[in-house]
Image (cartoon, rainbow, N blue to C red; front, side, top):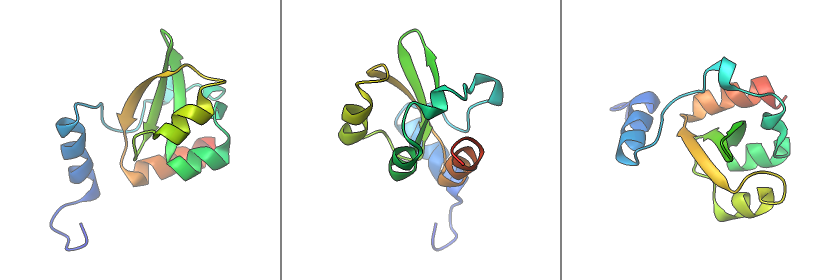
Length: 102
Protein backbone atom coordinates (compact mmCIF):
# COMPACT_ATOMS: atom_id res chain seq x y z
CA UNK A 1 0.00 0.00 0.00
CA UNK A 2 2.85 2.41 0.79
CA UNK A 3 4.17 1.93 -2.73
CA UNK A 4 0.74 2.55 -4.22
CA UNK A 5 0.60 -0.88 -5.83
CA UNK A 6 -2.62 -1.86 -4.10
CA UNK A 7 -5.43 0.18 -2.56
CA UNK A 8 -6.66 -0.33 0.99
CA UNK A 9 -10.02 -1.59 -0.31
CA UNK A 10 -8.34 -4.20 -2.54
CA UNK A 11 -6.12 -5.43 0.30
CA UNK A 12 -9.05 -5.85 2.68
CA UNK A 13 -11.15 -7.61 0.04
CA UNK A 14 -8.30 -10.09 -0.43
CA UNK A 15 -7.97 -10.56 3.33
CA UNK A 16 -11.71 -11.16 3.72
CA UNK A 17 -11.64 -13.76 0.95
CA UNK A 18 -8.54 -15.41 2.40
CA UNK A 19 -10.14 -15.64 5.85
CA UNK A 20 -13.70 -16.34 4.65
CA UNK A 21 -15.08 -13.23 6.35
CA UNK A 22 -17.85 -10.90 5.26
CA UNK A 23 -16.45 -7.62 3.95
CA UNK A 24 -17.38 -3.98 4.27
CA UNK A 25 -19.29 -1.54 6.36
CA UNK A 26 -22.59 -2.94 7.68
CA UNK A 27 -25.77 -1.61 6.12
CA UNK A 28 -27.20 1.16 8.32
CA UNK A 29 -30.49 -0.71 8.78
CA UNK A 30 -28.54 -3.57 10.42
CA UNK A 31 -26.86 -1.29 12.98
CA UNK A 32 -28.44 -1.02 16.41
CA UNK A 33 -27.27 2.14 18.15
CA UNK A 34 -27.72 0.52 21.56
CA UNK A 35 -25.52 -2.42 20.54
CA UNK A 36 -22.78 -0.05 19.33
CA UNK A 37 -22.46 0.89 22.99
CA UNK A 38 -21.97 -2.70 24.17
CA UNK A 39 -18.30 -1.82 24.55
CA UNK A 40 -17.08 1.50 25.92
CA UNK A 41 -16.13 3.85 23.09
CA UNK A 42 -12.51 3.98 24.25
CA UNK A 43 -12.21 0.20 23.98
CA UNK A 44 -13.96 0.10 20.61
CA UNK A 45 -11.43 2.63 19.35
CA UNK A 46 -8.47 0.87 20.98
CA UNK A 47 -9.36 -2.48 19.43
CA UNK A 48 -10.78 -0.96 16.22
CA UNK A 49 -13.99 -2.97 16.48
CA UNK A 50 -17.60 -1.81 16.60
CA UNK A 51 -20.38 -4.08 17.83
CA UNK A 52 -23.42 -3.35 15.69
CA UNK A 53 -26.01 -6.10 16.07
CA UNK A 54 -26.99 -9.08 18.21
CA UNK A 55 -28.76 -11.86 16.38
CA UNK A 56 -29.39 -15.48 17.38
CA UNK A 57 -27.01 -15.17 20.32
CA UNK A 58 -24.17 -13.78 18.21
CA UNK A 59 -22.61 -10.37 18.55
CA UNK A 60 -21.98 -8.94 15.08
CA UNK A 61 -18.82 -6.87 15.08
CA UNK A 62 -17.25 -4.81 12.30
CA UNK A 63 -13.64 -3.79 12.36
CA UNK A 64 -10.28 -3.63 10.72
CA UNK A 65 -8.77 -6.07 13.25
CA UNK A 66 -10.18 -9.35 14.52
CA UNK A 67 -11.26 -9.10 18.17
CA UNK A 68 -8.38 -10.34 20.32
CA UNK A 69 -8.57 -12.29 23.54
CA UNK A 70 -8.44 -9.12 25.66
CA UNK A 71 -11.45 -7.75 23.78
CA UNK A 72 -13.39 -10.99 24.13
CA UNK A 73 -12.56 -11.34 27.84
CA UNK A 74 -13.50 -7.74 28.62
CA UNK A 75 -16.82 -7.90 26.79
CA UNK A 76 -17.78 -11.41 27.95
CA UNK A 77 -19.62 -10.15 31.03
CA UNK A 78 -22.05 -7.98 29.11
CA UNK A 79 -22.38 -9.35 25.58
CA UNK A 80 -22.69 -12.77 23.94
CA UNK A 81 -19.48 -14.76 23.64
CA UNK A 82 -20.12 -15.80 20.04
CA UNK A 83 -18.85 -13.34 17.45
CA UNK A 84 -19.79 -12.87 13.83
CA UNK A 85 -17.04 -10.66 12.45
CA UNK A 86 -17.18 -8.39 9.40
CA UNK A 87 -13.85 -7.14 8.08
CA UNK A 88 -13.94 -3.43 7.31
CA UNK A 89 -11.02 -1.41 5.97
CA UNK A 90 -9.61 1.13 8.45
CA UNK A 91 -11.20 4.06 6.63
CA UNK A 92 -14.63 2.42 6.81
CA UNK A 93 -14.11 1.56 10.48
CA UNK A 94 -13.24 5.22 11.14
CA UNK A 95 -16.48 6.30 9.40
CA UNK A 96 -18.44 3.93 11.67
CA UNK A 97 -16.58 5.14 14.76
CA UNK A 98 -17.27 8.78 13.92
CA UNK A 99 -20.94 8.04 13.32
CA UNK A 100 -21.63 5.83 16.34
CA UNK A 101 -18.92 6.52 18.94
CA UNK A 102 -18.64 10.31 18.84
